[in-house]
Image (cartoon, rainbow, N blue to C red; front, side, top):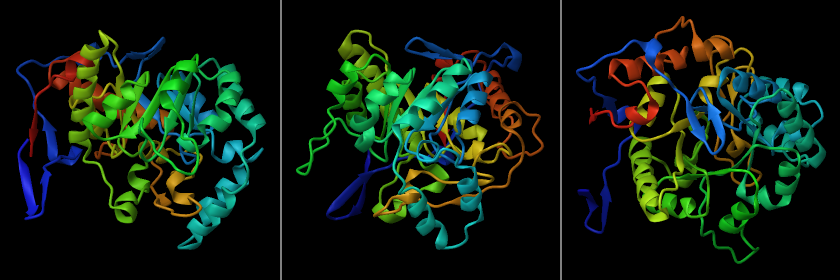
Length: 368
C-alpha cells in the first residue's frame, strides 16, 4: 500500500472510514424478501448479524432478552450497574438527569461500587430462563477474577472486550491474562477485542477465539481519539482483519474465526459497509440508544466514560425515535438510516444481487 509522507521523519498509510467508501450496485437485483441475514458462530445460529454492545445505556437483562427473541445477540456488561446494584433504576434515572461536568464525576462515584458475583449469576440466569442465547462481557482486567462465576452461571458466549486487547500484553506490575491458556480451559466460545490491524488480529485468532472484535468500541460515546490520540479507520481495519481471517484459515487448516465490526456503526448504511468490507456481523450501541425502551433513557455511554483515573468517553444524548423492535424492523419514520436497520440491510443485499451475507462480502466498493 502506498505510503504518504507526513514529514521527512514520518510516513503513514492511507486508511478509510465507512464514510469514505460506498457499495457499488451490480447488474443483478433481487427482492429483499429473498435475502437471508442468518449467520452462525460456533454452535449458535442467529437470524440477525447484530450484537448489542455491552453498555449499560442499551443493554439490561430485559433488552438482552428482547434482542435475542428478535434474532440478534444482546451482550450484558458484567461490570455495569446491573452487577453492582440490586435495582439500578433510580441510578439510571439520575444519570439521565446529570448536566455538564457533573456527569463524569458522578458516574465515577456510581461505578465505584463493588461488583457482586451473586448479581452476575442472577442477571445471566434471568436471560437464560427466557430461552435465548446468553452472552456476557468482561474487560481483560476483570476476566480472571470473575470468569468462573460467569461460566458457572451458564453463559453461552464469553466476550472479553476492551479499548484494545492484545495477545501479548506485557506488565511488570501483575501477571497478565494469558488469553490462549484461558480460552483453551473454557468450555464456551470466546469473542475478544478490540483490535485494528492484520497482525494484532492474527495473534488474537491464534489464541483460539471464536470471534474477533474490530475497532475500539465506544463509538459515538468515546473520546479516545482526543484523550489518547488513538483512532480506527473502520473500513480499512475491517478489511485488514478479514485478510487475517483468510490467512489464519490457511494457517490453521480450515479454522474460521468470525470478524465482528465494533465501532463507528451508527446507521444502517454503516452495517452494510462493514459486511461489504469483510465483517461477519456487527456490534452496535448508539442505534439502540435511540430506543424508547433502552435503559439509558435517551442517553448513551460506555465503560470509558466513568474510568476512575482517565475518562475517555462522554455521556451523549440521542433523540428517542421508536421502540427496539421499530429500530430493528420498522416501519421507519425517518430517512437517515436509524430505523428499520434490518430492512435496510436486506435491501442493500437485494440491490446488489446477493441473498446471503458471505456472498455480500464480495460486493464491489469504491472510495468516494
